[in-house]
Image: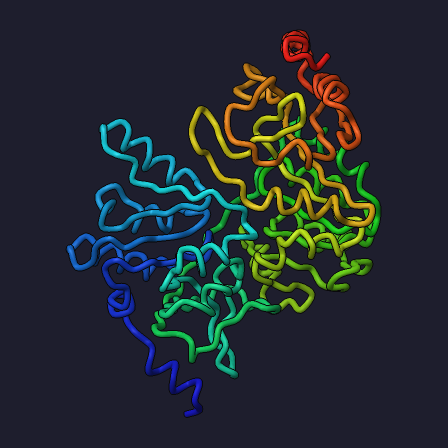
Length: 440
């Protein structure tokens, strides 16, 4: 038996044995999205339910039903303390049920950009434990983080305790995305289908916006796309383009389909030529199958992928992100809804700045002109929440009514241009608001 195989055998544990490595008061980084380990989380939840552990601080982005059905349950709050860096329906549900019952909010929210999350977790918070899903060990003793290099790779280098759940369904991915068995304290083997997120189907407004954005993209551009129906529509509209590349925090089904269609081959990339780069992936089974053993894709930590200076090294970088509201000066709120934290900043500002810093790059913020089934305008006089992308950084804005470039424009010019992108029924009211603010 070689050293790697011996270490693997020594550290192989049942889920309950592995969860016992997490002490009361621990600061635990949980894998993001697909990387949330179901067997480990169930064992940790069981220990908390039995009163064997308490005050476990859980730090993470983008929780899923895997965590929601195990460690992030109402009855475990207090014994497990969620520290969310990016809210989903799981946190919103915990918060709403606590409000309804008159209990304190059980979820702590930490504002941060995605690119800064590894430093925040490793050095500001000082997490001591990492739990995540990995692909099976290779012959040299390395596990691949698969869909989720993001902050898992950096945390694995500083945490005292690394516990991995080995899932044969997790794709083996190349890049700066592995951890050696010698750094791992506990190994759990658990075969389970990966979390699948069906591709969101675009609405007519998404198709219109997708075509507008596609016309702004040159052949040979490098792409970053967010998640959802609108970015999928953009990808659909780009399938007749040529020599596109990928440098994105999140690898989505839409981007995978562009590569499979031959529109994106990374051939003209000026950084990592011939290779698509991403920090994490979440999507359908086709996406995971595409990643497995694919040497034309590389995963890197989000501290690298989302570094604006790194992003800017891709000539003709195109960043496409959605927002919830845009004020008349161009400031965007992409994370707050109905007076509450809805998601988080994520990597939006990272790519807004990186794309604009790129030679011939374009940073694009896109949204439907209305929300609430047409009852509310997304272009507003004042934002209802925090600024995700400052007005100084906003470049191109697109709605189904057209697009505008805000760079080099005065606040008066911006207000007029953005009002023209609003739904017609809201333009008169927005013009009155602009006049009241002295903008026009």
